[in-house]
Image 1 (cartoon, rainbow, N blue to C red):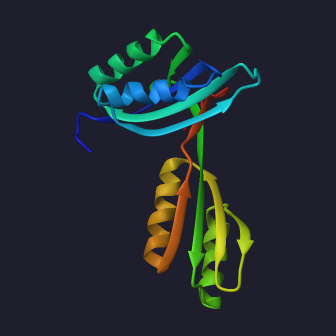
Image 2 (image 1 turned 90 degrees about the vertical axis):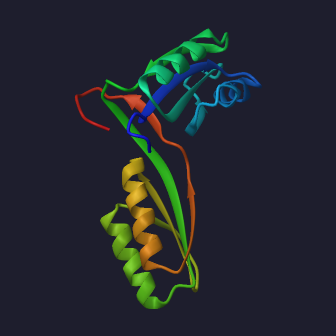
Image 3 (image 1 turned 30 degrees about the vertical axis):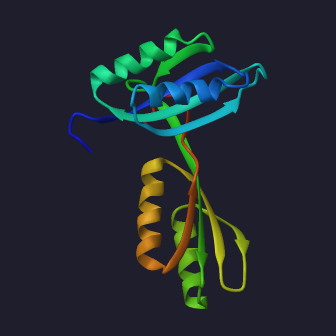
Length: 169
C-alpha cells in the first residue's frame, strides 16, 4: 500500500430503501475510490440501515469521500471512525478440506487458540467460524494457508460501533 494511503473507516446511517446500497457503491466507483469492505444491515429502526465502509486513501481523498456521502439525500449521518474508539469485528469462515486425523487435531488447537467455533464437521473436512478483528482474521488466513493444502475462505466486512469505554479496535 502507498505510504500516503491509510485504511479508513466510515459508518453511515442511511434510509432503508431499494437502491441506496447501489447508489453509495456507485459513488465510490464513479470517483475511482477504492472500496475495501462494505457491510450493511437494518438498525433497531426498520426504516434505517447502518453501513460500515472500509477504504484506503490519503487525507484529501477521505475528506472528499465524506463530503460526497453527506450530499446524498438518502444518507442521514456520516460517522468518521478515524479518531474515535470503536468496537469492530468481522466474520470469517474457513473450510479445511482433505483433512487427515492429524490435521483435524491441529485445526481444533488453532480453533481453541483463536477462539473459533467448529460449526460443521465431515469425514475429511472441518468448517470454522471466527468473529474477530480483520487483522486477526488476516493472521488466521495466513496460518491456515501455510498449514493446510486445501482451504476455502469466506469473509464478511467489518462492522463497528463507537465504544462506551476507551478501548481500542
